[in-house]
Length: 387
Image 1 (tube, rainbow, N blue to C red):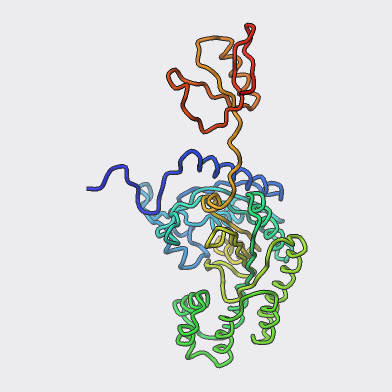
Image 2 (cartoon, rainbow, N blue to C red):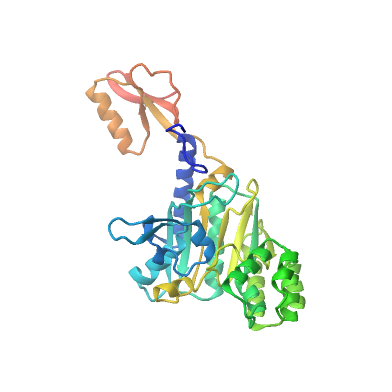
């Protein structure tokens, strides 16, 4: 019999010091997004499964917890990714004609962990821009993602760029089942040339050669030049390469401290990406700390095929590598049934100060807050003095 206090695997309580760090990061991220004009939305944790998985791929379906709603008898899903929900809000609830900028931050739940040490309950923060199909929106989202991470205290970052249109352009005209297509994407992302060779045996020669070439197309700026030489000169492929080259140049000018690379075989892990996709890596994290890209087709499932581009990250994972800020300065106050003392404490708290009242018998216990001042009675008045 297991202990009642044990939690399920890959779920954990967040204790005070880490919770404070996570909450401070959340506030900073939302503030950066607000600085870009993003409006905060809060989609529900549960939705009908048909809505929750509309326009997404099989990977998200496998991540999603499912249960039966006792009120309607229909199947509900616990969100594993907030992006489709925000697309639904833009398409059905806001229903605006022009550009809409939205951000969100809330828990998501994964049926299976993504890695050995990963949580199944990430705190997902993200921002989306709807209504603009041009590269300007992609660049603004990239700038916002990098500014969010820099605001979190990260300094050494690597930006990895790719584009879902490249693989789609290479496979254009090839008859392939959805299951086989998923296997091709998995093999490409894993750089598994042998499996890719087996999967593409029945493909046209040009397509087979291009897929094998894609496995090798990752690295620095030379990757784009190699792709122009090696990949078939199809309009979709060339448009993607042009956009990637332009984005890399502009990001390099705005963020000269960020190293930029390319991985043309990686489609980012989410089935809804339709164009440019990116991942940001940072010192101390084995996986990307932020991922994003363009997903114009997600809104089509809700009746509005609207241009969309955005990014998301796990605030809990970010907190592991982001430097913590110093403890919040606070005022220590004694406990006494004194009207003047209670009035002084209340006034200080109204002014935005943290006042920690020491309960009787606990005068020597450590606090989460850095009490650098104390409230003392001097000449009949309660005044604050430095410790």
